[in-house]
Image 1 (spheres, each protein chain N blue to C red):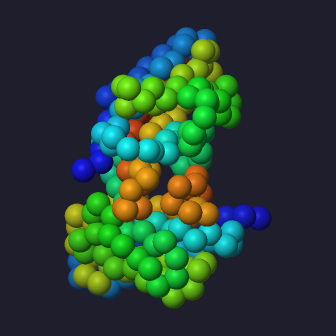
Image 2: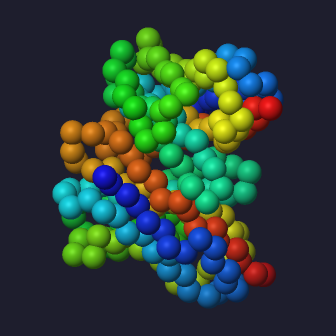
Length: 114
Length: 112
């Protein structure tokens, strides 16, 4: 069965620190990959997505993610975080298969110290 | 304004009392989905719908029903709610299942 793993459950950083959040999935075929963000008290919003082409994708607010097919990974990065990046981040995978399920990871809570 | 709406936003009910959470989108999306969000478990898909009259189970469908009689609406039905269904529920829609999803504001359900 497909699964998505986000190994960092809670990350605490200071402002201006660099960020990398891990995401690994367990499907061997073609996938679409997403990162969503949930700010406190708000609903989920799309940060960025990968469908095909350049494995390095750029999203909103200075975030980027790199798809490494050989590692089944889609890690999220930001060179310098801000206090306003405090949120929960979810990786999601949709596989090109007969099923149309979308699988989310368990989420990573990011806390930024001002 | 393009959006996904859910009602009610908050609901406290008792075990066994049937309830319906409505979901509506105005973007003419084909794919709609329901998720529940629980601490430490992320979002888990309950049911999804590829189009009108086409629905299928997600990862945690037990205790839930859905229907898709119109493209814009995708209600979630709990025939006999139980305390383990206390959760935060999100409805989402997308053009197809391969596109980004747009989420509703969430419904916080408490079953006593």
